[in-house]
Length: 244
Image 1 (cartoon, one colour):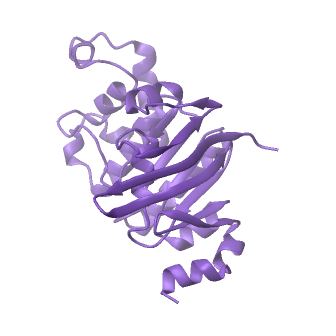
Image 2: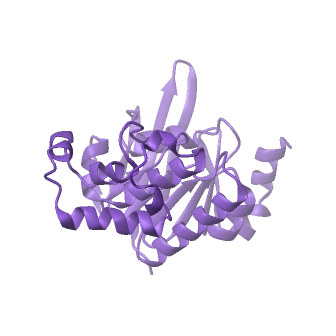
């Protein structure tokens, strides 16, 4: 039986009088591709932001790889093996495609521009770019990439740290069907190589063929957990999405 890699325990976040995430608890097992879905405003991205340290929780705990993360901080979690992407790809547009990956490998700007990057890390960056079919663009400024290519570059960058768990926030939003297929292929390949995924995604066809299990949030709290087939037939899920 797979071990629990991430445990979210009664996370709560309020904005004024609005409770965005309400006593939210769920687990992500090692080796899984777990989906976190729900209607707009159900608290998915807020939960992601608390898990990864971009937003402070009002209450609750996060446990990663058996350890309680008392104060989640993005840089600390990155070193521990937890990385994430964003709805709008976060890259360094003024750097080249290759330099974006080198920076993600842990080099400072001074090392990058002082040409003290090791040959090993440059080779790793090029291998990653080849895997994502971005190698022909390695010398281009990242600002020249298409929206979908930026999403792929961000995904490649988070993998440079050899993470155990990657949180993907809307990885296929706004990209064309060819890019969706490419993103799905990379997720499957990396999962087969040992990377666990937690994915927020609105493309239900992608979720149902890619993810298992599926966690459904509504009004900031989980209302269903199970296989894609179980979730699709759950009356609470149908009510949440269709409004009864």
